[in-house]
Amino acid sequence: LHASDYVKQGVPSIMPKDIGERRVIEDTIAHISEVDAQRLSRYLVQLGDIVYSRRGDIERCALIRKENVGSLCGTGCLRVRPNAKEIDSEYLSYYLSTPKIRKWIVDNATGATMPNLNSDILRLVPLEIPNLEQQKRIACILSSFDEKIDLNNRLNATLESMAKTLYDYWFVQFDFPDEYGRPYKTSGGSMTYNKELGREIPTGWDVDNLYRIADYENGLACQNFRPQAHEDFLPVIKIKEMHEGITAATERVKADIPETKIIDDGDILFSWSATLEVQYWTGGKGGLNQHIFKVIPHDDFPKEYVYHQLKEYVVNFVKIAEARKTTMGHITSDHLQFSRIAIPSPDILQNFAKTMKPIHQRMITNKQENRRLTQLRDFLLPLLMNGQVTFK
Image 1 (cartoon, one colour):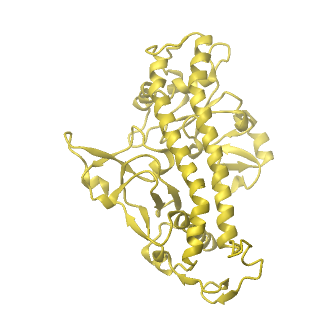
Image 2 (cartoon, helix red, strand yellow):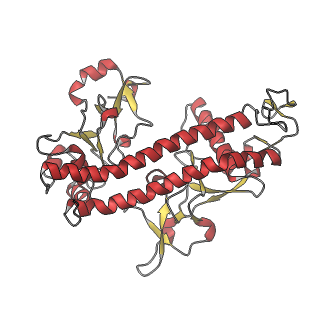
Image 3 (cartoon, one colour):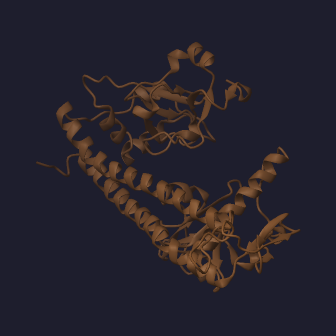
């Protein structure tokens, strides 16, 4: 298939970029037409199939779940279909995710510069598996962690949506509660047309740029600060870690880097290169790599407001890129300088923070819990697989 073959709606086509840790990432999945899907029907996936990338991150696999059934195993991917009479597909997906098997796959891949995977290599993966009943019991234990992680992720998606709705209600529609608790604009609150924004804003509000509400601390070129074997270190937080968290492949940086380049739970990160994204970091203490800003709210601007305002404005950067039919490579200080936003009064900002703080704190707590659950699951995974941990 070529880029021109993909459509906005149709049959999902799983590509290498859509393969996460034992699951398909559906956020940006491409689609093909029903006609093409019928023509390529032999590549459709079934419940329990396992999909690999042929190149690049070949050690990761995605288990096909109910919501993925009927998708296509797309360009650049390999499909594994376990024999259900002998192997539990969920157990196999965990087995293939153990450090030992991941390493085996990478070590046996072909290609000098980028690892390549093929079906012949996958057929040779060494299998040391218990009987089917034991497989199902082990998979049940491990999947209980993933079910709780999924539940927290779904809850966070709901909380994020609710928080955005509230932000829009206050600062896009300008229906924040007035002094009598009524929606400001709808109740006839005074509005003034602003030429810079090209719209009306509440009377008395200022207009300024994104530098007014926060400082943007860029990360280090961490490759210049590698720790020696005896030195303390921190994990390097790159864009990949923003998406996947800290893994065994995460690079290291000296622990004594400047404090301004160190991040911790609750910090706002803004990736300004390649992907334009704003998020709360909850992966623990780390060293910030270049291409990511640590956003430090100014004293008179609550973190909750800064988070949503920046998240909202990043959408404008993306729209500008789409209108020009180009890829926004990165955000520069000029982009931030030329941005224009409406600045609310201090009392409105404080009321907004008071409303949003419990929602944001729950989102952060859920992410922290997911990190602990993931660590415990990954700790138990090889122990259950090699029999070091048993259960009644």
